[in-house]
Image (cartoon, rainbow, N blue to C red):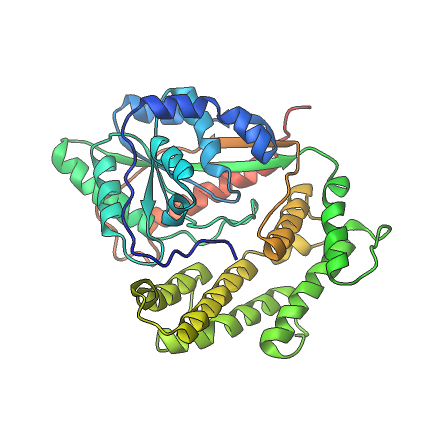
Amino acid sequence: MHNIIITKPYRFVPPARSGFWPRLLWRVLPRYLNRSHGAESLESLGADRLKASLDARHAIVLTPNHCRPCDPFILGLLSNQLAQPVYLMASWHLFQQGRIQAWLLRHMGVFSVYREGMDRESLKFAIQVVADAERPLVLFPEGVITRANDRLNHLMEGTAFLARNAAKQRAAKVPGGRVVIHPIAIRYFFRGNIEAAVTPVLEEIERRLTWRTRQHTPLLERMTRIGNALLTLKEIEYLGRQQTLEIGPRLKALIDALLVPLEKEWLKGKHDGDVVARVKSIRAAMLPEMIAGELTEVERVRRWEQIADTYLAQQVHFYPPEYFGSHPSPEQLLETVERFEEDLTDTVRLHRPIHAVLQVGEAITVDPVRDRHAETDPLMARLRTDLETMLGQLKERKPPPL
């Protein structure tokens, strides 16, 4: 389990507001992305749409999908292209990984948000910088890294809440002033030999399972066997037996086996809906006493075990069943193997070469008032549609030759 839960009192971390450091730090990003994430080539599309909003002095929110850890750095390509620094909202735990990382994040325009509860200070700051059109604000509406470029996870309603409140303040401050959202689709293409890239990882997992390495088994069959074995081990651990269902229902049943007992204990009953939201609700209920240090050692250990179960449920949720279909793309194969390795070791080895594409969508004007007669939030529905459309179009795009 990654170190994403910090059991000490939260303190809001604001960004450094100087424009000098973002301009300097973003310039070294292409080299960093190449060395640390294998992104050897970068491509930006639709930047003119964002420039038009900047020229019109609109207040701007940028909402990218979030499938890889390097997504925030990919946005540096856009920031450099337009010579426009941005603010980014990021989980507080990232600021707790050492002073150097915390300093770099702040000076790149990143500020903290507490994901395990209501963070009024972060929300107030975000609304204010948007309403003042100080800089574009980057929000990742999925809220977590999915490692699934071809499936958009549930989008958090807080995106619309923030944008509408900023739109109200903007209209009051600047007659005719508008807040717009630009969806941003980020797509990665693997341009190497997929079998050569993932075989060392598969061999290592097979050895962990005490299997003989299956060098002559077709890649998809080999991956499916490994995935089935890993899933079966968790089913036996939590359900007592292997399930005889299709992959989608198997995953859902395991997730419920992990979360429902915790929801009954901490939330007075099973909750429906998005897995990420369910996990957040459970953690928000159990963490205050852990942070206050009011627990016995036995109880503290028990709650850490429960947090590990919520983490596992979220990780299981991010395995798209369609990735195990008959014709997965090289990127889908790579993402699946990367998730296998991450879930087993908390690390992912570098695979290259990767071509990263960023596409800016059309501006969506934010109405300060939500249509309460609509069954779903129209703003969030439009945002999802635009992101899914762009991601689908990028999937069919051919990367430039090596």
